[in-house]
Image (cartoon, rainbow, N blue to C red; front, side, top):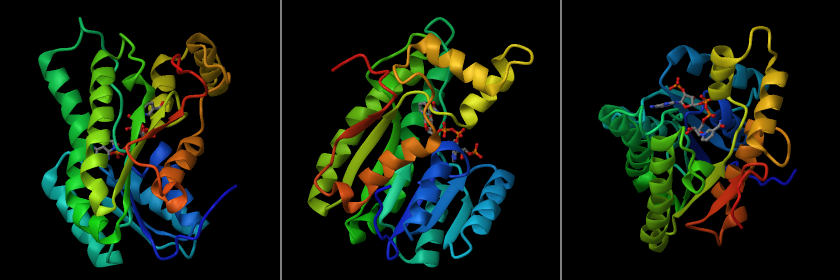
Length: 264
Ligand code: NDP
């Protein structure tokens, strides 16, 4: 595994208590960085912090409850990171979830909610952490979805909002380049995580194991690599884009979909 020494750097991960975000937290800790992460559910956050602290006794960690859609809470999170660690070098805008709905079943309120989640989960943390990112000439990485380029009718609002976020990421990259702040994203396909665990609990046939459920899903979706991705496989791509390993890359994205993308 390729890695890099980040012992003088600070990473901030939104939605770090589960799935892709939690895998990112681990990846940064393994490289020696101090890591701050947030999620809304205090119990889940505490459980993640305790597990990480056990696995990495030397870890410099800050777990902070915060809803990324709440400007005040995000501001308080940024203040806490500054007072704990004094800086932010890498911001990973990862918090969120998808919405399963067609045009026929998406109400106006659901559209607003989905657009707010996809845009403001990126805008609010970016605004709050930007002064520190500018000081550090740091980087931002957003977890986006392949749905941005390959919309699915059963996730109409999510797909549409995700497409907008590709554009926003590119605009941010251009605007922040003179400050030395790079902005990139990953486009994930289906990654094993809390979201899919919840869907397994709700949708699986009685007695259907997780392995059987995800195997069937991969076949049904036609994923060329024949399986769902692991959270760490998404985290590796985020790690590359966040660190100086990708120092000449901005306004770009990496596909982490197991070959599911149909375009060239
Ligand atoms: P998980 O459900 O495992 O993790 C989501 C994390 O985000 C949790 O820590 C959750 O904590 C946090 N979170 C959700 N909403 C908020 C909020 N408003 N404020 C703060 N934290 C929040 O899911 P994934 O790891 O799969 O998801 C990570 C990202 O990847 C999401 O943006 C998701 O939409 C995207 N994605 C994932 C795909 C997949 O197949 N897994 C496919 C396409 C995109 P809490 O609930 O306690 O707040």
